Amino acid sequence: MKIAVPVERYPQEGRVAATPETVKKYKAMGFDVVVEKNAGLASRFIDDEYVAAGATLAPDMASTFADADVVLMVRRPLAEERSLMKKGATVITMADPHAHKDDIKAMAEAGLTTFTMEFMPRITRAQVMDVLSSQANLAGYQAVVEATYAYHRAFPMMMTAAGTVPAARVFVMGAGVAGLQAIATARRLGAVVTATDVRPAAKEQVASLGAKFIAVEDDEFKAAETAAGYAKPMSAEYQAKQAKLVAEHIKKQDVVITTALIPGRQAPRLVTAEMVASMKPGSVLVDLAVEHGGNVEGSVPGEVVDTANGVAIVGYVNLAAKIPASASALYSKNLLAFFETLVDKETKTFAPKWDDDIVKATLITRDGAIVHPALLS
Image: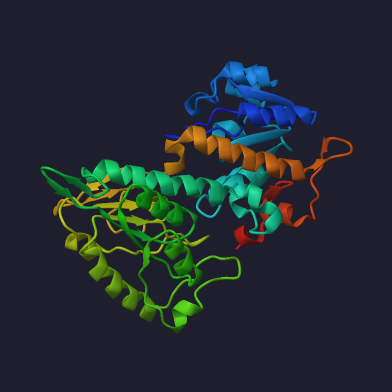
């Protein structure tokens, strides 16, 4: 059976779906692995390393996909890539299906069996396969790195003979995986950090990292978390109270990092234009949700917007891909762990158990149709 690993062709996508380390594991399971030339170059994995791991190099996209039974990708395949895949091939990727339903329909029509890693259930045995966590963790870190660059000042307090540099005040909105890593990273750099989230469990997590928790802690707040650990949409009344509290807090901040996402829905608006206008010149906002509508009013995907009052709104997309070597190392291990559940260990064949909870949760197209309930409405 042939496993294909292509070059990722989305703009600014430097990640790769398999590293030389994971290629060795696929080979050990008895599968042939074909890697497109320079697939790992942006992640600092050179072709010679893949060959040494047992992969075969393909000179172009067509030969990479030719007769491939399984295709490992970071992003969903483009139209020209789909056209080169054989009917019945299995694609394992991050398809972002809620935002790209036309592409998912096209994948079904092409006869592809597609698994999307973002739908991985949050159960114990799937933790090692959780791409959202592995990539969000890196995005949270990178958000702080981008903020330090745009801030043009030092983060830690520095006492010198020439005077004292005050510590940066950083406010993180959303204390999921990305937010918690942003808090931890900003704290390591010496910033004074505050954070907010609508999930009650986040308060203790924020405090454990040395940051102060900011929220309206009423009865609605105490019930604002789903069984799966995601934030629930909040009422208009709560949002108004929280917005008032946040508006006053934001005025005093040097850096604001927003990370709030709700699966399958547009990102909630957390920072209004009025809040941005209230910030001091030289302040920075980093919007991690910019690709899904944005948490910050005025953020633009892929750009840094300089406002009239001297505030920078950083809207870089796909922040994990800005550190592709680390991101690829983690993502490729997520894929490998998932792939292993699809293999019959006795016969060493690719044999998904279609009634398995992980398979059912991540399978979105099969036999020419979209099959995931969340995508059928």
